[in-house]
Image (cartoon, rainbow, N blue to C red):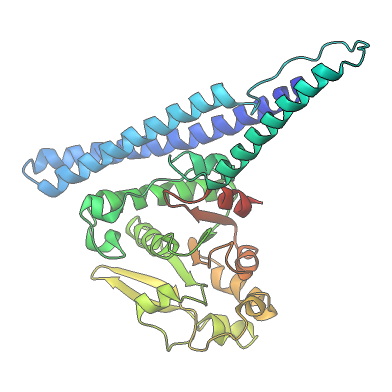
Length: 346
């Protein structure tokens, strides 16, 4: 059974690994083109500090891509089947009872059980310490890594607007490119951005991805579906304008929900706020026919739709919101619980 399991899982893991590496190679080629363009611009303006910083950030991304590709290959080779220790069975033999030996074995089994309990307890406390850990637990590709804003001297919730040449901004552009490739494989356009718990950065991630997509020539639609915290709606200062919670049930209502949000001097986003009225029961609202009818109308003919949803383990409605989307993007912080990630996956 173990041998058959190893063979099947190895094939599946190899296929998934090749697909992930192919996607990263495509992103790498796109990045190399951007580096070449930056080099050409630097040749024209050799004293441009902004271009030099942009090139350094791009080279860091290129190094990160090479690291991810190498890590995927190594992990596949080492742990491709998921089986770490295995001894083939031996033929059974008739053994006479030996009370003394059995008592010793019972003691050893007790120690093993205690060790297993200690392992289980530690496993529940395991936290994300590497960028590859969430991808392994969630069984999903890593789209990118965003540095802490302070570490790259970026301030505010949207470095894609305030610090467009920072490493943080470039990282969001990289995630958008990866997201576009992932959605392209399933012919999808709508992605729900969520996390396992509050304050993981899902709202600022949704905002920066929308800005990055707009800067890449796309026309994204950004939707605030987190009725409980209303983060994007608050940032946009659109708390008293019609939004999702103002749906009256007719399809025509959905066409009046989109508003223009001037995020920066050069960036305008098409934005759907939560709404001017507070839903008394958000979970019931997002299960309602009004919401289910409005989403296809809102997302029709859109190049990219980014939906900010509540943390998936905190409330019930995130699952209903996700049913209206093509994909889910999970925002994971360093230090997040691997146990909660596994719960989110299941």
